[in-house]
Each structure stands twice: as C-alpha cells, then as structure tokens.
View 1: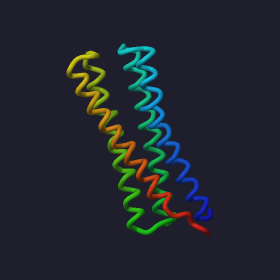
View 2: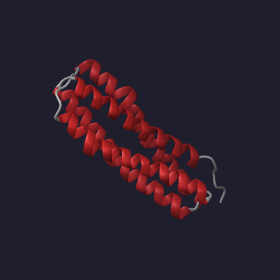
View 3: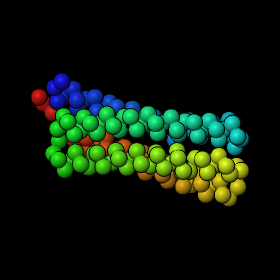
View 4: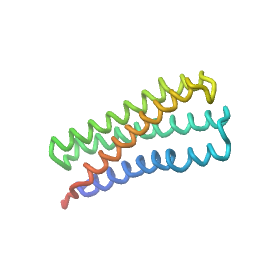
Length: 146
C-alpha cells in the first residue's frame, strides 16, 4: 500500500475514535442524563458505553500505532509522540474501565463518593480524548505525496 493510503487510513480511524469519544461526552451522555436522570439504568448505560469506546479505541490505537511504526510516514520523533499519546489513551481507558467504573458501580448514585469518582472519571476520559486529538493533529501534519 502506498504511504498516502496508510496516512489516510490512520487519519480516518483516529478521527472516528475522536468523534466517538467527543460524541459520547458532549452529546449522548448529557442528553441521556436529561431524559433518564441519575438512575441505575443511566449509570449502567454510561458504563457500557465507556467500556465499548475504550475497547474499540484500544484496537484503533494498536492499528494506528502499527501504521505509524511500520509505514514510516513521519520522523522518528513525531512517530514516538504519536505512539506515546496512543499508549496514554489506552492506559486511561484501561484505568477507567478496570478501576473507576467498577468502583462507581459499587457506590450509591448522587453521594459524595460517587461524585468524586465521576470527577475522576471525567478527568481520565478527558485526558484520553485530548491525547487522541493531539495524536490525530500530529499525525495529520504531513501528507505523504508518494
């Protein structure tokens, strides 16, 4: 495959990941909260969505990192930044789904403990989203002509 095709594939999959994360955080979750409220069903739905986004994002990150390493579309330094950002996003997703969400599921809704976990979850999710967004930006800086 030509470098331009690898470049396009990586840009598309990272864009889809950013779109899924942003769509969930800024569209779906607020609308679901408005219509369903702070109920166990809402919490379970949100947890399932976050887990699905983290799981699919992990696969996207592996593919994007492989493209970055093997297609050699940019300098080693830029490639290291992209792969590092993708690793950070995977780590955030893993931490959120394996540590924060299980704790939230064991904590009663609308309690100070739950609110603290929700804040932590929002920060971790935000770091992951920002990492993927920056990786997309860095990886989109140069369009190979060959």
